[in-house]
Each structure stands twice: as structure tokens, then as C-alpha cells.
Image 1 (tube, rainbow, N blue to C red):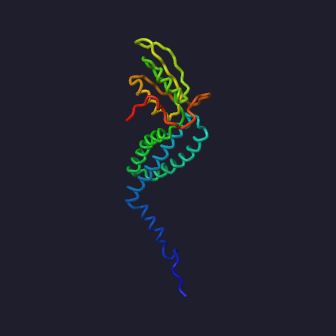
Image 2 (cartoon, rainbow, N blue to C red):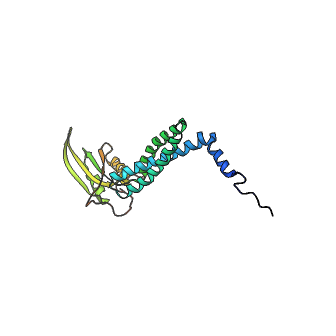
Image 3 (cartoon, helix red, strand yellow):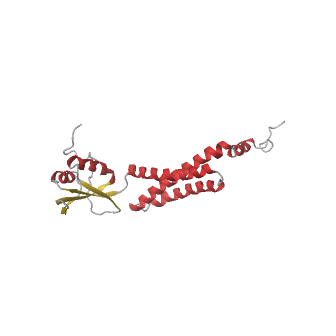
Length: 208
């Protein structure tokens, strides 16, 4: 009885095919740069989110992100060191780094991590704005101050970052020319927030 030849007897055609693929121009100039670009994009995006997590006090989330980030980076830099004479991989590495920063910021905006302090300065009557904020169960502090052109009212509130776009929209609907500033908050105690996911600021909203 004759048996079919073993892989060793046939010279391992699968291994030979893989070796020829890895040494091909397609892999060297197209696939490898794309893999390096993707890896660098992922690790820089994770790095941006890790830093933002640290600034917002998420001390248990940041190490986990950092573990994944550094492993991806090691894979990318390892390929770069093995292909120093390939200018396309270098450009892919740099492009992934630049794109990763942008993607990381976009992801942070989508996730809306943490809280912010918003300060609103108005010269006009702020009663409606303050009442609408308090009606939505936000803790609001008002301060009488003096501006360049006379007395002004300063309104301060700590809000969830995800609520910021709606609050800014509401401010513009009542005081289109109001000055406001936004600052990140690392931690907060005894703050007052809405307890339910209701639609914000139904008071005084314009109909479509």
C-alpha cells in the first residue's frame, strides 16, 4: 500500500507559499504599511483616551487601556525596525500617529467622559435661564459682578459633558450674545444633576 507524501516530502508548499507572499512586493509596499498604519492609529487613539481618563480621575480604566495600547505599539515598532529601508512603512507609521490623535479626540467627544463647569456671563436679565436650569435639577450659582460696560450676572453650573451641547443651545436661544466658558472637572462632591434622562430644556424652546 502506498501512502501520500508527507508535507516534509513535498517541501511544505503551504510554508513556501507564505514565505513567497511575505516577500512579495504586494505585502511589502501595500499590506504591511496598511497594517502598521492601522496599528498606530489604534494605539494612539487608545493613548488619547487613556490620558483623558486620567485627567477625569478614571484611575482603574487607564491602566487597562495602557496595557492594550503598549502591546499594539510594540507590534508596530517591531515591524518598523525590521523594515527601516521601506519608506512607505515610515510614512504609514507617521500617518497612523497623526490620524490616531484626531480619532482619539473624536471618540472622547462621542463618549463624553466626565463633567465640566460652565460659566455664563450676561448683561441682561438671567431669570429665565437660571429658572430653566434649576427646573432641570441642575445646581446653579449666580454671582453679581462688574464688567467693562457695567454690572453683569455670572451663572455657574457643573454639568455632565454629554449634556453640554444642549445647554449651549439653550443659552443661545435665550441670550444669543452671552459669553460662556467651559472647563474640565476632575472630581466633584455634593453636585446636583438631573436624575432622569428627560429631554433638556423644554421651557421656552422654539418650535420647528
